[in-house]
Length: 214
Image 1 (tube, helix red, strand yellow):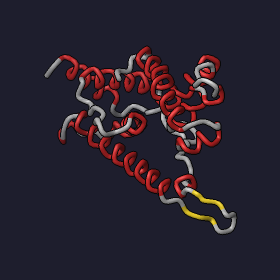
Image 2 (image 1 turned 60 degrees about the horizontal axis):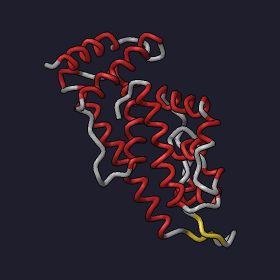
Image 3 (image 1 turned 30 degrees about the horizontal axis):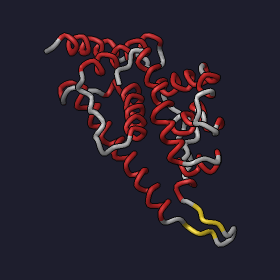
Image 4 (image 1 turned 90 degrees about the vertical axis):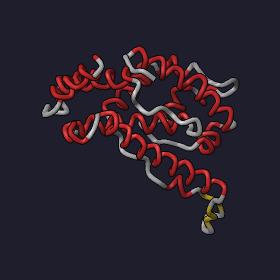
């Protein structure tokens, strides 16, 4: 067993049984996350999976682990296999949502009462806010709002990184690119490109500064 795994096992033993809302548990869990990331054993993003889907699935899996760490049984397998199995389920969920969104966009429904085409995916309520990790990201957005708002595509100041991250990450009202483009009077490809190249980069740089390995 390598040194990282030995340290991880010790942290897991210390964390089990602790109150998940206690400062001690939060500190231990943060250290557990760092050790797991340092191991390189967490499933990487497949080439055919978009970045948004993978990172959203990863964030949700970290939150799941934070809430369910006491259920981990080392006799049934490593923490990595347990984590990666759940991550694979979260990725499948993300893929299903993406495909449904793609199909519903291609085949919208017509509302005879209003005379307008509607996308059924838009009727699905946003998931409730969760996670200390997502709360940390939300705090990062608010703390750096001015800087993020200054980072936007040319001729589209309202499509800035603060707004796009707020509405693409699972921390608020998640919106499809088509809807964002209509609201911001911009092109979906332009917004998506800016989000991938500029906004996510800012977020990743901050996550790395907090000790996360991406």
